[in-house]
Length: 443
Ligand SMILES: Nc1ncnc2c1ncn2[C@@H]1O[C@H](COP(=O)(O)OP(=O)(O)OP(=O)(O)O)[C@@H](O)[C@H]1O
Ligand SMILES: [Mg+2]
Image (tube, rainbow, N blue to C red; front, side):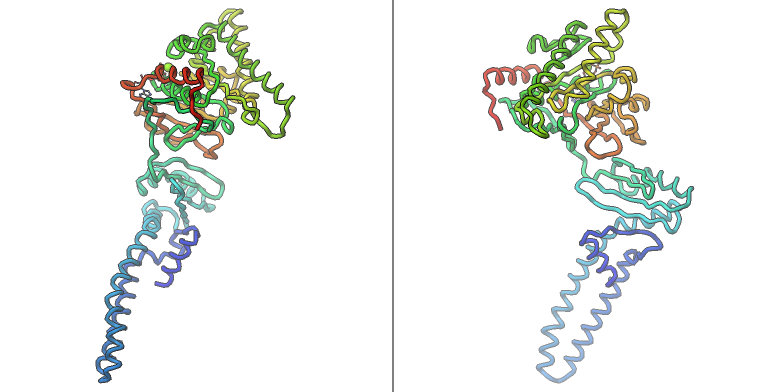
């Protein structure tokens, strides 16, 4: 009984539970322990009452009744509360202990776990037995069934394996039309589903996914977020599809032909270089574009795969090389100047960005819809999770944020847009008018 109370107190102090058959596991018998302790207490109180009642001394009778009777009643509540606490505190411990038996793991296997904000992390310590290590590294399915929660990530380390589970299902954002533009100075963009995107920490975005996976819808919602931040937006749409028609509203900031695309990317690079010049003339240590009161610039390049396939003759090859050189410069140098790219493509391929090195400089990467493992590898490199999620939900996929510290890309649902009621162009115009008239109210 005291051991159980001690263990509960240690947990309240923040000590991690250590679970294994070779570790103390008296919590398995907490019901029996509590029953025994309760019986002993009741017996002692009854003896106390009897001793008083048979003493023939009215004072002693009064004292035992005043103390004994409330004690007899109170102990029921006390043990009920303890039973509840122990059951809650040690439920997972007991499950994990039996999990060791059920999965034929060695007797000396040790588990631990910690509950964080939205995650339950179960850690399994490795021993020196190689076949046991292989088993431990593949406990995913068994543990998912045990805890009944979605696995977010598995982190295999030399000494242990961490399995992280999602405790609360994150909420998907729903995009509604606004009555009034909502400008903000906060650079961070809420992408929903528990993800926040800050271009300063994770510059540049890559959106990949097959046809109909939701790339254009995601890009539209993020363009509105850029507009809320008064960003300067340039658009390249070599297939002249969804985004190309924005030329009616954004004028020569929208490029669809190769020469236009070359021009727009050059303009963005020039803007970046001018900013660097200005920033070095007005040097402030450790400063970035925000300190110099620059707005962010976003170059949104849809269907890049289609464009990179255009370099067939000598002339178009030259244009392609020029455009790719411009994009490379922005990716490598843009962050401090506040100049960013968003690249979308149906299929990422190694040649598109001239190798994986450049891809690794894109801080936020998304693969929407279902992709082949090769497709995922092209987007996430070594960050592809072992278990691929079901992406049947429209606009869902995998997301990887460089600064998140997570080893693997996570399941994600992009903001939900009700196509019947939401009109992207109407929203865009609202922001454009407000920006021109500067009617926007800064938060
Ligand atoms: N976030 C979302 N909310 C609601 N519906 C969505 C969402 N994402 C995708 N859809 C549905 O899927 C359709 C296709 O999406 P979208 O046009 O964005 O695909 P895409 O990846 O751009 O395809 P393509 O490569 O052919 O251009 C949309 O018209 C819409 O009906
Ligand atoms: Mg599209």
